[in-house]
Amino acid sequence: MTVHDLVTALPEPDVLRARCQALALLDVVIDGYAETYDFVPEWGGSGVQVATMDNGSGDLFRIAFDPAGVFLYGFDHECAATPWRDWPRAHWPGLLDGLPASLAHYPAEPAFRFEDFFDATVCVWREAGAPAWQCGPVTFEPGETDGADWLFELLVDGGTDAACSYVEDYYERPADRAAVSALLARAPLTRATVGALNPEADFEAVAARARALGYETVN
Image (cartoon, rainbow, N blue to C red; front, side):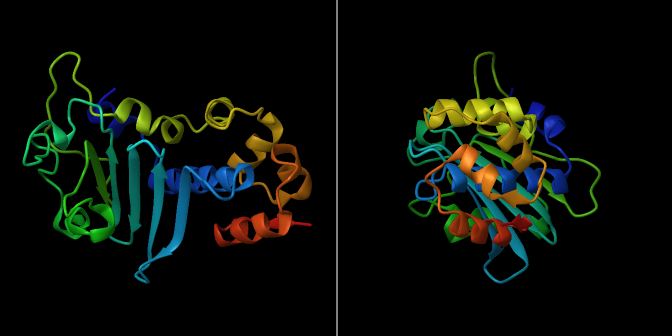
């Protein structure tokens, strides 16, 4: 899968946002200090929310939910489309072509840059009111990849099995399927749900984070 497949596989923006929030909360419950997924409900005081993923090995994504639309990018440091294939760094041809003016400031956003460069191998956007996700006219030869096949797999899948596999693979611990399903379904967060996923978690701390993400909590 490349970005051309991703634009047809991504859910609607509201569903995408909910999945980002659920993965962020899942990480908070499992490990509140070293989350892979995060969600910032108020970013920069401008009505923007930002979802992030950082695997600690140089791969990441950022998704800005802006009143003007959604801007999504990912960076797979080992794929063919990495800007680090050349020096000075250069984006894969066509990566940002067609990015609408309403979202065009994001590649220049300091928080989205590394050493003053926008490190990205995948870019997708959707203006408010647009009927579909879009990307630039990038092309790939057989065997060339941009990281879209795995960077966004949990957001595309959205299912309990995929989320459980993530917990079990990344954190090397079992994942209670019913508890994970409850988080994905945005059910009110309970002590039982938190305890099933992480008996050592501080429920009050987790509940505070959950409420910030828009989850109802039940003592």
